[in-house]
Amino acid sequence: MKLTLKNVRLSFPSIFKPQAGQDGGEPKFNATLLFAPDSENTKAIQAAITSVAKEKWGDKAAAIVSKLAEEKRICFHKSPKTNANGDVYAGFEGMYWVSASNKARPSVRDRDGKTELNSQDGKPYGGCYVYAVLDIWAQDNSYGKRINASLMGVQFFKDGEAFSGGGAASDEDFEELETPDEEFV
Picture 1 (spheres, rainbow, N blue to C red):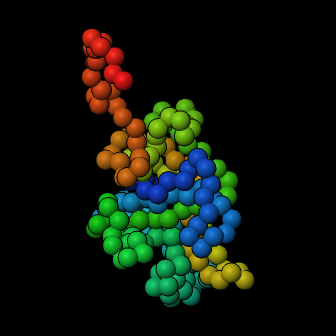
Picture 2 (cartoon, rainbow, N blue to C red):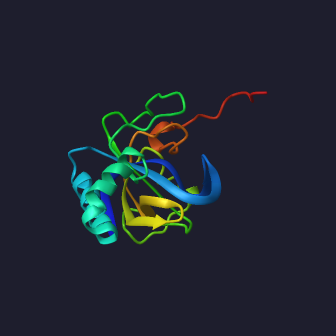
């Protein structure tokens, strides 16, 4: 089920170059998308998960989704993301999040919706706000049951405080320099 999350904060983006997961495996394009618990995004993702689960598992859907959430086998998370030491990542405090990936490179667009962006453009970056197009789907195969999100596209919406390693300097970060009287060695 195709879904667009609006004005979500982008974290851990690998949207220009695929990256292998922590458990190894085939490299994929991926991103984590943060949003407030009381947002329209929360309602939309919950509705999409319910819909694909009912389509896949019928009357057993609610029980299966509950178990998958408990086992962290679902793309939607209500608890903060933590590192290996159990520390909450910056920006995740009090936020819900979705983890999405794709073997195919997602479309990455600027605010106008037409201009295709690449890694040299400096956006989107971890900490900025984006619209994200996802495909929510239920998995039930030899690898087990899950509810997944495929990352189809990302559209830059607005700047935000960059997470470590993100963003680029803006015009306001520079001042006009005078030519020095002597050269520095």
